[in-house]
Length: 215
Image 1 (tube, rainbow, N blue to C red):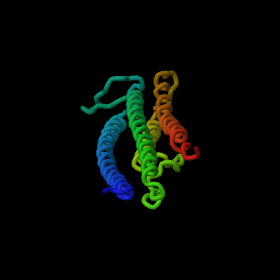
Image 2 (image 1 turned 60 degrees about the vertical axis):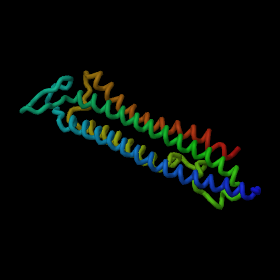
Image 3 (image 1 turned 120 degrees about the vertical axis):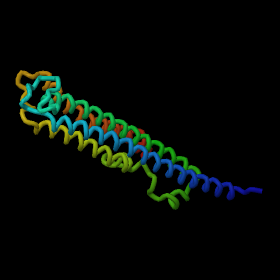
Image 4 (image 1 turned 180 degrees about the vertical axis):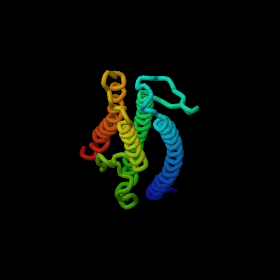
């Protein structure tokens, strides 16, 4: 005949077993996501790098078609600007995905913590201590380490692309070039939006997760 204590021990064992299973799944997910993001970033690096190194400031600024010099394709400044907008937009999308998945991870972690506390009671602190606690994170670490590292890396790449185009000869000369100025401003907005999405999600984290601790 099973006793309440044996039932409690069985519940604890199931919770711990689920924890190990969840940890393994998260690791596999992180590895797969890392490979996907790395491939995407390498492709963006290669594409932007090729256009950047083959941009010739002597070509008419507003020329939109490829010009061949000595059988090598060269691009105008406006083509480089257009490429930078595409690259920064894709990077913004990647950051948006990272932020969303990172928040989802914290949300699931919060729900798991509630369930474990309910079944483990006073034993919860003895088993987990301060580990797996999503409710005490600040602005710089409310996302899990894997996601936060990628976010800041991608944001740094966005800034690097912007600095690169600013350093290109004659590129930021926007006299009588309204469309080029629009593309340049779009680059700035795309970088700014990464921080906006990050901050907005942090506000959601404080409202839905961190705030629960004080209720």
